[in-house]
Length: 339
Image (cartoon, rainbow, N blue to C red; front, side):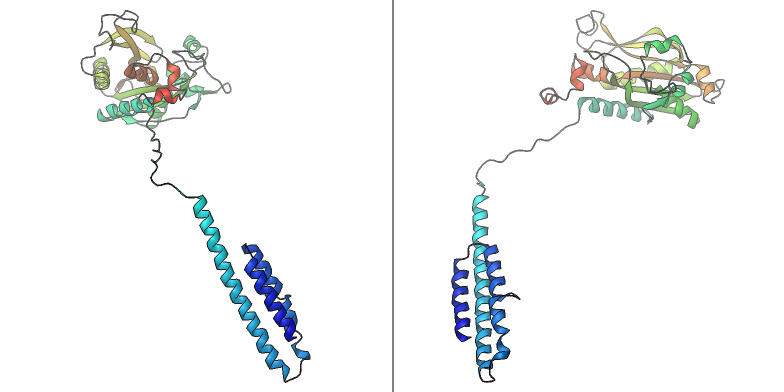
């Protein structure tokens, strides 16, 4: 048995010294020191020894176990250090090289203009109201004095989901919902996405953005409407920009008007941008019809109001001198980085 223990010791020491991976070391530990290992098998034969041999060979077996265990621990540490050194060498970074500067994003030009418009109207005492983009026909048309088969609906080119549900063509439905749920005085703007069946080109898109406004209170007149919108344009484009109002027709306002702003390129002289008119059509507006107020439970003999709607995409294009609506939605970084 003594010879067997010495043989196991020599073989194990040589095998441990030649090991080159943690897996190999673990296999050697199991082979020699495991529950079914060679050294364990020798120890199981201790019962067959004489009383005189047992303590001597037992001590030798323990010494062999301790030595092999120490060798395995030492070799494992060496292998781990070698692996770490190799990994550090492979992952070495030259800290003298210049770094890669991360790209920092910015707000989309449309979002910038929307935020500016919100700030202007918040400064004038308005609140920002929101509503669903998937809307009922009742709120989007009927309560705005446009019942079924009204000719004004033909100009909307609506996306219908079913007979009574649609993608809103205007954020005027938010005005209706506000009047139904809130008593005057009311001062709101309702910015958001709207949808109309349209072919995509330089000036049209099936998805675009509107900012509509509503004021309802005692004694509201056309003068309040004009003053509010002139203040809005002057804050957005500068006090030197002139505005004008032209009579128009909308089913839900009377009197109604289109508001034009002076061309910021030619300042009223006429150019290709304004089609030689000197002014650019900007928004529609008017005094809310009594029928609309009454339909929302507001006494039109006590209260009056005005409403307006402007295309957020249009005023963004005018602010940045953009002549093609599509660049606002194509996410071309070559364009966006210029702004």
